[in-house]
Amino acid sequence: MIVMSVAEIEAFLSREFPQIAETGDFIIEEVGEMSARMRLRYHDRHLRPGGTISGPSMFALADVGLYVAILAQIGPVALAVTTNLNINFLRMPEQRDLIAHCKLMKLGKRLAVGEASMMSVGSDSVVAHATATYSIPPRSEVL
Image 1 (tube, rainbow, N blue to C red):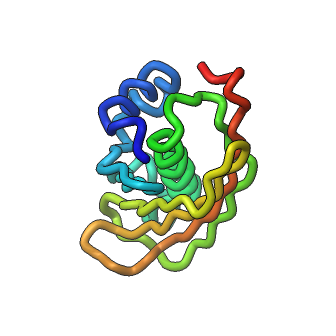
Image 2: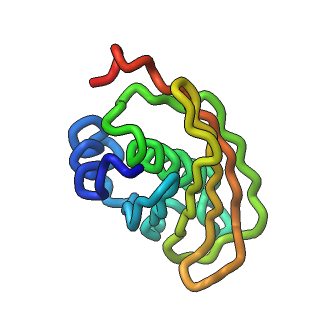
């Protein structure tokens, strides 16, 4: 069940994580049941030598996207933290926006596990795939 809308998550991120929200790089396109779709806006600051989008930028897209999927399900929990994120870079992304399709595979009381498939806008080819685990704090620690 979705408990936070896109607008509510955006307001939460602006308040709790202004370092992410203020860049305008990460756009929440949609939240759904156990899912989210995020966009990383293309900018040359995300490029690495060779003209491809950097690994750290794709890592951040996966991490933020999965965090958004979790927030949509459990509400405003700032201290839900990444405990592990593994990413496979499959092919060189094009110099355009990236979309991450994020899906939660397990959402328990203390742990969430999800995956993110990233692709360049206009392409169906996955450029990177990430899996991640997040620790969810006890309800007494929720903001």
